[in-house]
Image (cartoon, rainbow, N blue to C red; front, side, top):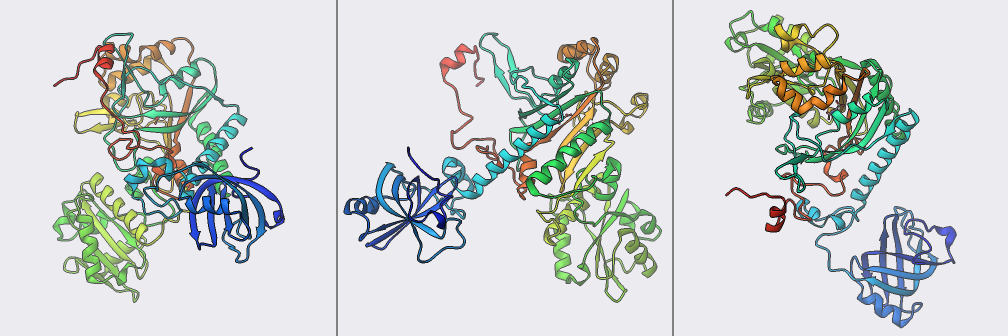
Length: 582
Ligand code: ASP
């Protein structure tokens, strides 16, 4: 037996007991006659003491030679500590060591393996197995485990069945690029890794499974924006005989259960807003509603005077920044420069200070008067002491810019409390999205999403205005889930592909299997998928998902530890009948 206890469990009650412990050497304090060692394992730290007077010479000799991260086994007696450490769960005791065995040596680690580390991101990723020994990282993985267990328990209790779907599938245009896998046995042919199990879960509904879920890896070969992973995990779900309302209720239940289980937070009924409203009020389809600063549209109260910039704009829109009226000229200039950065892209910003005495001081005093400013304050919900910031221009761009400013100010003003949870359903998404690059409409969610009842007729005349039975679950400004009610009728699905620019042959070739299935009694169905990595990160109070993944890829999609992707050798290429282009 290697150990009688772990390093997190001994307390004052065990004083006098002889115990065996194993673990890694975290810290050594060597005073010559006495040596203290912090011994670490997953469960915690226990202090060992080697004492010239009470430990044998042989034990002292070995203790003198151990180094950081050595794996050791000790046997000794639990004794009460003279100087207790109330911050450590085991801080009342220490182990007076009688026997020591070095189970394995360690090179000096490349960074400090403690809660606070001197290791930079790249170095920690290269030696991720060492990084995992650190509490903050380990705890995030344990949190992830708790979340997946809670999901499995909850859904299973609600009669959902977890079913695996294949990873080697067929390449289909689903939005992002596919990762492909050459087939050795089928020369010149390729599998694709699933971007999501979308069509399979729909086929499970045709197969009568009724309620499906799967905690599943998905793969998307996208240009990596910060904090995206080429492989990520979804909690993927589908249900038969449901309407949008049913899906929302089921998964509101799941989310509420997780918040209670994991964070002990009770949240009421989730508010819902439409996509159009979200864009109008927040300039964003995943608004953070932990704080206000809603947009006020100002066209009606700005376009009656001689101010050309506003008069020519499609949209004039502002927000009130709490307490901003006392910003100095310099601070405001900095803010103007911030919105003019290329990442935000505004041309400029008009501001109006709503002073505490009720007067206004603005950058457009020449063009407008007190009466105007009062209306601006009203529309933006500004109070005395606030700063009204106004952007103008093209509707979509201006909304995105003001949304960026809103988030930035919330960050600066500490309004995004990580321990506060504000879920929100965004519903009635547009079915289609115009793509400037291809000059075509694309399915905003995916081509299997059903339009709202009665809207299919508008597809031919005004496709951009068609709304879908599609919804997102937003938590603290992050999209944590998204789904839709699906088309389950072959004719409508075929028509949808036609609207999306597929020829009949293309549609048949790529999605014939699904449309054929729809001819054999497909039930009405719908579902949702949650992004597990992001969900766990938010529950862990963080924005970055990387630490919640045991072995993540870096921003270039590389695993720097195993050094992947990598070239394959000539023989492998030959077996696959592949040749690299020059
Ligand atoms: N498959 C979809 C996605 O990955 C989710 C869904 O519609 O259920 O976003």
